[in-house]
Amino acid sequence: MLQDYLESKCDLLHLYVDFSDGKTVFCGHSAPSGQFAADVLAIPESVIDEVLQYSLSVSANMKLIAKGVADHSVFADCRYKLVQMFLKIGKYPPFSYLDMDKEVGVIKELISESGMSRLLKNEHKLLEYYRHEGGEQPNDDRLPASDKQALEHDLLDIMSVIERLETALSFPLSVGLFYYTMKTFSGLVAETHARTKNDLASVVKSLFSDETYWKDFDNELFRIEDYLDYGQNTKIALIPIESENEPGETVLAERCMFKVFSGLLLRDFFKGLEAGHYTRECENCGRYFLVEKATYQRFCNGVDPNNPKKSCQAAGRQLPVGKRQSVKDIPAHILWKACDELIRKHKQRGKIEEKVCADALALIREYYNEALCDQKYAIGRYYDDMELKNVYEKVGVSIR
Image (cartoon, rainbow, N blue to C red; front, top):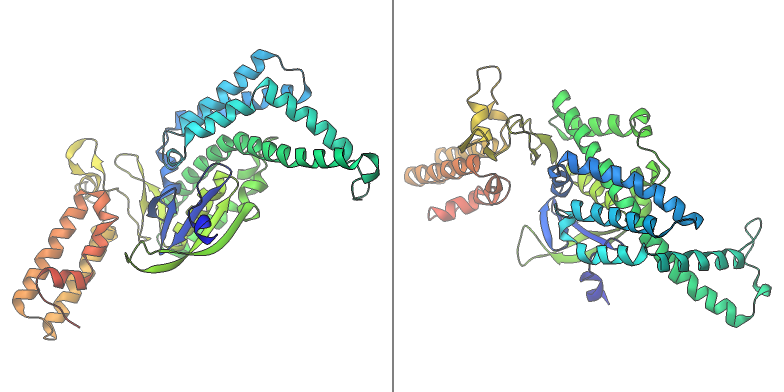
């Protein structure tokens, strides 16, 4: 039974995510906590706006369908736009990790004249059966036992359909809201020069307690309380999984199951902040990137669009004095400097010989230069390579 739970498959109704060691695992994909939330900002704003416009149209169509006055064209338009929303968003991580073909198939089945008429017909029967006053139990004397059993079976089926439908309708709205929340947060981080965990927590507090900001997002289809109070729709358990940082080792991970995708994204966002990770906009290329060491990093490690031979970090260092990125604020530099100082101290204390010291210093300088040119390496293997134990092993010595 535990094995079945550990191997649970993800879909929009069962969004399983594991958190451990500052990493997030979703649908078999592992990333530093906060990365999946940051990935949402890679979606072009034009796509988000188009999806939100489609949402308004779908909302109007669903009102007609619920009233039973929708014709074939309304169903077709509603189905088409809902499918398009999923396909447009589904091109980008982390949404692309889901089986979008399956989700689209479910939508086509749900938003059909036969499917909706069956839903509305059975919903009417169930409302009649469960009519009660003042919180009393259903009136069991109204129907024969066989009819009650059949209706109770229908209830489970209908509730499942309604849950799936609500999830489908809220999905694009919650993603759009999260997108603009992340952009606002990143702007506040840059504006306030937040760089420590406490600074980041203060930015979050001011944003999430700003009632005027959230008021603009409230609407009939999507209640803002459901978005912000993500814990209400979340199940959490501790499970044993293989460590992301120590292959072969087993650790306890926090497994969360969400009913809405915004809950997953918010959880990843907060887990990232807990680990000192946050999102900001590169001042050179405009792309959003994940800062992993709570430093005031202004430029990403991606390729400079104005000079493919250089990184945005390199471009930032070549700006005029007063505008350039201070090298002390670059995470890769901070780690390199710390390792450099430790190696020199080991030499001074006689723990390593002069040649070993020189080889080790040359090696970490090589790693540092690679980190400046390769963002994927800088936020991944670079930290493992710079572990002193690994550095000394590479140059052929081991110390205690």
